[in-house]
Length: 319
Image (tube, rainbow, N blue to C red):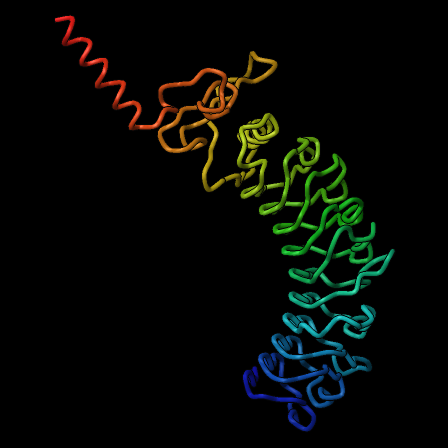
């Protein structure tokens, strides 16, 4: 392993003589403006390369010098955006590709990448907005983990129809409002699904009920997780009947459900934490002050004290 991080390198030309046994190279946090495969003429055995946190603008990769590359980290090269995704085909052994923090140019249709061996793809904070084209990942047959977090995606229609080997999918931190029943129809091997920090306000259980391998479902910090809705109850009930770890926490609310086995329209009862401190919840899940009748617990503390004093005075006068 060779580490040359933070050395203010602008090029690697003539820096890697006689390194035929080198397997791992860390050149992160430098001043590189390109990645050139010619630099690795004497390091053809390289399997792991970290070029993160540089100023890479272009990828000049071709030939036989990176044939054994398995892990390539290009994350946080903010100027890297205008490149042909086919450039990675010259790395036939590539398994992990990290492009976190780069600005990807998305094609209007067709796949983002085409590669037989890539299994771990990290595209967090890549400026992906609205909707990716259907089949964007259809030519990554061995995709096992996909990170699309912290983008601006509104929909995911048709994205994963061919992702039959996908186990971990991170969609957290996007703008997803709702999911169709077939949103994850192709991901039968899915084990972990992260939807936290989205704008989800509804959730159809049919979206995930067929995912027999699912073990982790995270919808925390969403409007759905912060409400006592029927969708929320159905998810909660479903996860109680399965082995799924259901992450649905909300900073300032939680729900306590009654036994709904005999009711058609479940009556929802919230904990005090659903409302402001000291308030109670009505049977419809609203805070007391929002319900038709004013509950004493919804009154300001000072007013309650005055009423209590008046009642005490009345009792004394009766005596």
